[in-house]
Image (cartoon, rainbow, N blue to C red):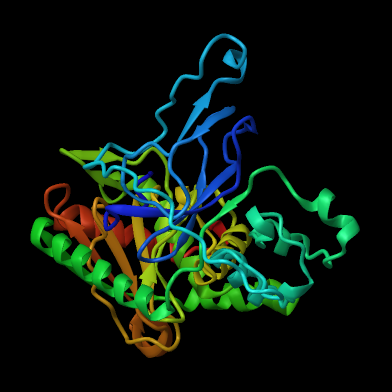
Length: 394
């Protein structure tokens, strides 16, 4: 069971996407795990063959518990399978209880995995029209994505081997309560263990706003870039230069090898998650905007990947146009900094001895005093400001 965030101690396997004998490749989705915040798709990080599924569906286990045994493809015929460690460091391991029993399905009622039910709602797919490929004919996400009407002649072709799903989870209010508890516990830990310091400044967005308006005038509405993409790109580039803001504190500071930028996303039912946009400093502004739209959509529909929940070295929270003027965030352990942006507002601005009105944004930095101090924090904010004054270079 991988650690999908510092606030996660246990997780429940609710769907297997593979079966023993299946060949898997790095980046493949092999399972779906239910956490207090969301259902997360679990990726595999090496090629191989699934030898054994170790955790039954519906079983809650601690972070670090092996979920499956994988053997290298080249070793598939050279003796018994060998376990491959692909997990986070082991926490206390709970012995796996038996899988939760499934209630008999009434005639005419469709059994559906939780993730498939949510995906069907998003896509407007009639669950009754689908042939389920899970045990006992249960509908899983692959069936929804195919969206094939339920015809008996197609059933055999649609059914992959041994796709396992869990029973439907409890009410959404249970998850909201669990998420609020998890957020509270993690933020309390952050304030207790991390010696925060805070800095704030105001950025003049006159140049950035003019450049963005001109660029968007030549794009279709669906492809227009929001100011948030410019802010994220400037933060990512500044983090590449001021490395003390991008990394993790795990028995000392460990600089991040790349700029994977966490983005705080508010969820429709309450609470938030902060998935990572990978290599944000290497993306163009257009690519970053597309990545932002994608990760927000999937975060709100419960379709995030495990790597997106673990790789961020720095998080940005942006309140947008409906937010407050400024936000002072709490660092997400084990990260060492968090950047906050308030809403963009017009303010009086003096420049070159002249007073005018400019679009501005209040920026704040929460940083870990074990790693940096106010001087480095100020350099970081100044770097973001400098980049925003030359938006065409972003």
